[in-house]
Image (tube, rainbow over all chains, first blue to last red; front, side, top):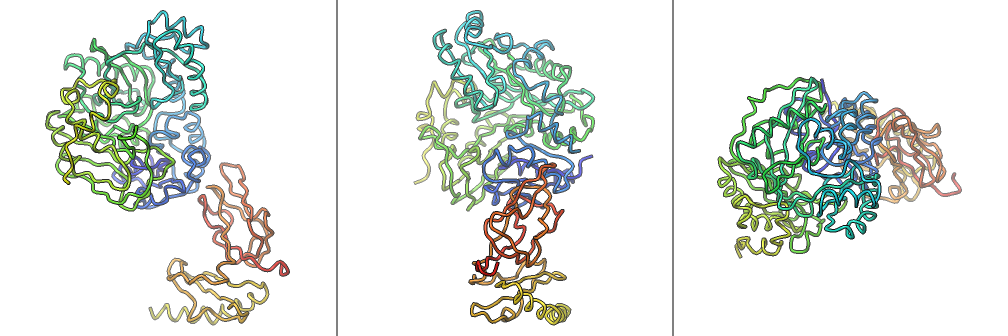
Length: 458
Length: 155
């Protein structure tokens, strides 16, 4: 039983978790850095506690600060949100050692699913197809070149401890691979404290498809359908939708069932997402697992009607799965747009500063998750997500039409945002016909997408 | 409100003479104490005469002054000492109202999962008001006590 949760995150997800806690009748305390004193989650929370300065290393990324804050406020659980400490096994272990429930997989599970290379091997053993790649970590350039020759170019170098698209480089040839190897090792070391790399065949024209799963402590594993996150820029997701246009109905059901079975059998617990690449052959290849709630979880919530954050908390509290697979009904189509403080006209340059005007969209089947308000100061220290617009329709076409209408209602002044980029995307043929792949932005270019946006009223 | 007025009268009668005396002893510019949800502040005017701050001591619910007083020379001499970590605070033995503090001295520790994080004074002065007690949970940046700087000769 969880009575009082420390929310160890910021921005829209802190607000999202706060809402889930209130709905479940659980008390919540929002932990914040000095830079987030005026954030909406802090303002609307019944209780909040400052855990450190703006520098995330001394606040949101500091395990002692977060755990100490939980103890100081009498919490019995910590929700880490996404990013920061959300998938950190030693943090989960330290929290448990202090009698706190970590809302996520246990430290043992996080450890088992920590190394991407090992997880690939583990899930392959449980029946998930994986992309041809190196047999685990490649220790040096020679081993990398040998593995790449066997797989065939192009190959992608990935940080074993990486995530969020960072620490990845594509090599088209053996020469390029040699050049990139040490650079990639250094980047991985700097970003994740672990320089080990592995190799995969780089698939072209792929859809990024991921499966939302939940597993209770007894090993009962359910899936909640898939999300397609193919519209990306430099491996950062911009738009997510469910269902994916890349899967046929026949492939989909068999695939989803197989994923849920594999992840449960492999010993995964709590909420998670398995990411796949679907190439031209329409076959999903497993690439990695995310052991946390994800930014794009509302897409699944809109299609299934299941509150995933509430489910995550209940499973962490030790409850058994409150539903069966047959009770998870997927209906219609949902799309999410990540509105960020980035300037699409100038290489998506990050923005910071005061929000001068803020108008959120509404209307039937429109959900807008945001921590903004007029007068809020976007701090320069953290990621640039401002708001998530999630729109549902009976069909993909209906969801797109509603998305256009909702995006036009969005008004965020004071910083440049990606709103107009999305308005343009919703006029771009490859997105409209569902054939957009992860290489879309390289093929079309931001300028052309922006040019497709309907002109705003003068 | 009648009750509040009556209580205010009692507070003034019992506390003000003691506080005025304390001001003399310590050389502080101002002393503020909380009692039963009321705050009484006694301030030495710039010219050196000790009077109760006019027109009446600030009284507010929850110990927060209802209206912040305009900055005075005394306010400018006051320096909040803030927690450097989130955890449970332990004040140094000499941290009590009237206690003397040297610049750079260890004034408190904050227990963060068994590690004592130091809080050091960044001014010398005299403790004018405590904002916490040893054992209290404190957040990062929380005001632990107010330090009032005095002339070097007085320390």
